[in-house]
Length: 95
Image (cartoon, rainbow, N blue to C red; front, top):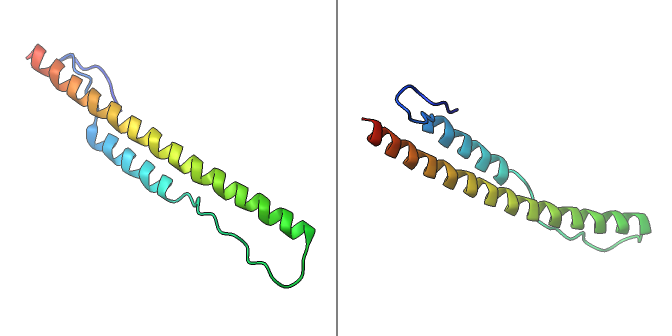
């Protein structure tokens, strides 16, 4: 996505970069971290209750994972913006 060109700029393809950020956001939004409790009723099963409890824990973990992924995407996007600014400054210096 980047290389140093003969004009001493980074030459990052920012359209591809923004596209990649969009794809990451879409993937992160696809993570289901919604916690849904199982309705109680009917027969009682220790195995089913244990499974349901573990499933709720997994949903909570996935919700936290989704938040961390979104923070990472924000950091990557911010870094890309800084690189774009630096690229423009380098271009202005060498022109």
